[in-house]
Length: 324
Image (cartoon, rainbow, N blue to C red; front, side):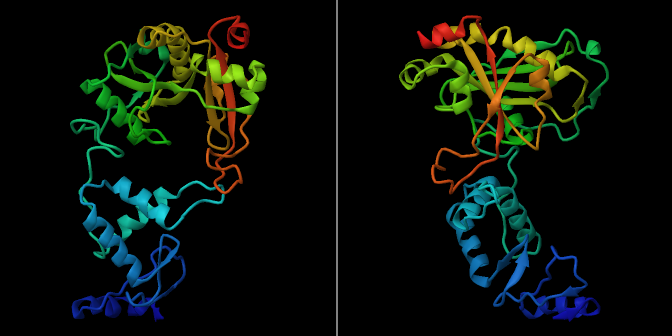
């Protein structure tokens, strides 16, 4: 161990070819000799030389991978998870950035946006204009369908990947997306609908259908999987206004795209992160909470955060349509 007064002398050992660093994550006044043949701490994890060499090898063997892809792979290899079972890919990303800053690894260049690259690269605003004030100053708010394969669609995916807390890897299966813009054409947010969850106890009890009816008619449900008001947009009541506008047209747009009607829409709101205020203000119905168990979590090895379940009937006789 070395005291704080010895920092300069120890860091100078780099010139002699000795890898030395400090535990920057610690608040202690004592610094530790972190030579690469010994254990040292970064981002709450104890690392050895072999760990860093394994990361270098991973980067070398997959030069096409993004920083996001590397962080997910690293977290999975280490089984680095929260107490609720969520993959700690953001912690892994922070660890990689710290190792890169210390010169121990060399990360690939930053991409214009994170996640899976869809088509050409998309440049996102570096200093977006702050949009604030009253809702009436933005009216009429425009809600426009996202057309697949267009530059608009790539930009839509990029915004969700960068600014939504769940991220986004691109469309999978049936989906309908909407751009939200103000009267001047400024981008305000994104709304995305996709396939409904296969089984949700409180939702299924609310509908009252049997397992056979659910299997036969689940395609008549959709999931509001992403709802994003861009972080530089600060306008009270905008969220509920947008959600109301979208819900008045999603049934028609879904039918035009897939030839099948929707009778009910669901969404999941993570407890502790959001209060669900926008959905409640838009007349969605709270039906209960999830069991905190993911698709691979029957034995609760991979639990997930508990979420509030909200539903929105698109027709008054939805139960009759779904349970007939």
